[in-house]
Image (cartoon, rainbow, N blue to C red; front, side, top):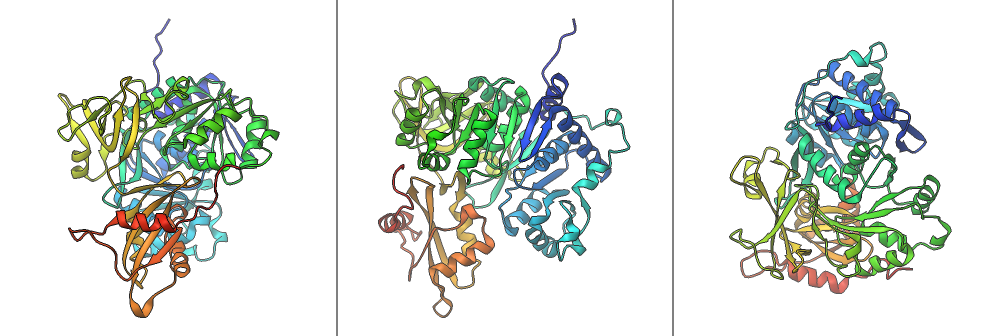
Length: 538
């Protein structure tokens, strides 16, 4: 009997699942229900269409879509065509989209016609060597005549007269790049984290192992695919041969709960914002959620009261508290049996991953002492695209090329059992609505408003949103805007997650003895003024 081996490329796992059970449902997205066989054929058609359009091996393809089947097919088609996938958040505005396109030197942009305004704003300003593929009918959008290129349907139709089984796709190996995942960094500009096929598969395999996933699992994903937590739900599900239910958002929680009940969902990835909304729902008991085997949480720690409430409401569900960062995907998880005794811990290193808490010299610190978290393993990504300096700071080489250590910039302590406890972040980051927001980016956008001469942004803790974004600004005397007008201006240039909840105008910003803006003082002021949107679970 011939020995069989696991696939080494991300898209090959989808093909393997299609070979094993072609008629099984792989992806359910709204009314669309895709079997593995049909989905794999669509991916092959997209790959072929991209190749005919001139896509070359290692080119970058940006998708600017919401949580749709077209986003999934476009990404996997990109990988099969030998290129690198980049999923841009569907809510970003033109400035950040332009940055991603320019920084990645993307050759193709696949976008929905509903996002035409932002795309055209970029194309009008920049002469990019870029082919645009529209999802939907661009002829129905006024003003798109000059930007009409080709449609997603055109790309898929290229394969109608071809036997896709005879097409030769580019040869790839596991050290080739699969993804650039753009994440905010301490410098204020998004950074493209480089992930090889091997990195992605290794990280996904480790998570699948501790979650004990199998082909019977049915996962409901409400997280954006631009967020690695959401994207890996797709990657993992296609690897273990389960069924993915992809939703555009979690805003209509009653509809989500109805789907969990009706579709017999077994896995539900959550975040603190989702939990807070869930616990405030009335008549929660009318939904049958007994099919759910596990929930996972990462991105920000669940408040202890939320953990206790979930445990009380759903005692049969295994709740996994986890910690990760884009630079290595996932670091650790807390086994559910430790949740009652160590509810504030994010757990231990996941399989095939090694962690340490070190001092300023890189030496391990004793249990209980705070230090910086370091990570080793094949889940550690390759570094930052086009930024050798930042890569050198974060990724330290070991005794041989594959031995690299990631210095996370996050501070932890470990207990005597080796369990990890998060202490804080080194840079100015805010977790709001489940998304990581860089305050420097928000400040930069505020300064594009003509009346604003100085800006400083801080986060205020909130039970529902994680953190609320609070902006302090100094305005020119003759052109000053009130806080509502400033927020209105922000809606034109910022994605929803980055919008300040409150804007306060000051004559001058407080500064410390070094002349730097004193954000601790601003946090104190904001904390005294802030009134939470919602108080306590219902």
